[in-house]
Amino acid sequence: MDSEKLLGQLPAHAFNLEHEGSGSADIVIVNTCGFIQDAKEESIDTILELVEARKAGEVGQVLVTGCLSQRYMEELKMEIPEVDAWFGVHEPGDIVEYLKVNHHDKQDARLLSTPSHFAYLKIAEGCDRTCSFCAIPMIRGSYVSVAIEELVSEAEMLSAKGVKELIVIAQDISYYGVDISGKPMLAELLRALCNIDGIEWIRLHYAYPNHFSDETIRLMASEPKICKYLDIPLQHINDDLLKSMRRGHNRENIFALLSALRNQIPDLALRTTMMVGYPGETREMFQELMDFVAEVRFDRLGVFTYSPEEGTRAYELGDPVAEELKKERARDIMELQESISLEINQSKVGKTFKVLIDREEVDYFVGRTEYDSPEVDNEVLIKKEGPLVPGQFARVLVTAADAFELFATWDGDSL
Image 1: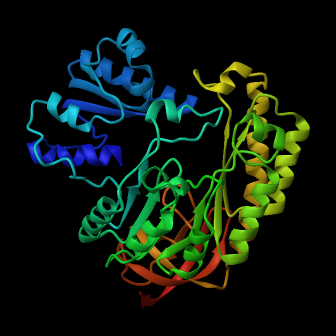
Image 2: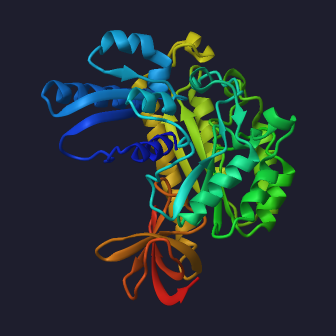
């Protein structure tokens, strides 16, 4: 979304835009990530490639913004002086000003980088959590909620552009509104978004396990526009590691929340993220995590290996778990999850689902159910037996499944 808002401002000032296009460019803007090691390395590699292209005369100016730039700006200026300008995470207006254009009233403009039928809606910036492994609060600052009125206005603008699915995101959506009113306001925001004509699906990403309110759970259960889907990163289940991670909850709290969610929303699809190789993770602790994943049977699960981040509390613990062992544990969890995903998907064969069509390929239309978020979850491959178009809802019959895809036919029933 940060990139989209910047991109939305530039055309108003006569800049022609191209996303990762080939060929030359007068100006290249790199939006970086500074959270995990792989993303940092990818950002640095991209910057270095563009610097070389600049030396060869293939591009003009190279500008860098985002989390990595915010966190390591002074060091990067010294290491890569060929970059023309560096910007942090809250400075789209500064970039426009740097490019010698008038900024006047275009700050709320936004150019979608997603397909036109879905869009991300960032409801807050920053984070007040103190997880020991996470550098986000240092980079993004304290939690700042966007006012409900502003979010409704942005969502109405997106709906007018043809957006049918809103993906509500923040570092922690469950904390939304606390900085404004002293209490969570996520349910209040969701009710307002549900009233917007044209928006048919609202999807929730990145809920912290603590303080996910009963009011929000009840609303998810009763409101048809809110997808029966929740991305709730848990990281681990071992109490000692959770305490060291400063997560603020324990195994008992996690099971209580998962039980409440599944009891009140029986068809809820749960997505989570796990971390392996955190300092002090023993073989027994990892087995406890494996047993937890096998017992809970998440619909979707991602895993990443711990990497020490300067300035975080966990950095002081060192990095005692061998890198190869981390990768082995990550593979073990994903193999277990693949078998779970296969069983869950095969249980859907013979059932009908409402899907949103994302794109057309040679042999299939590709869509998603409400239980799947774009780019990270399952897709539904629908045999071409009639005219479907991206952004259209349709009801399909699932005829086959593997661990990551459903195969379906369409009987012509559009929704």
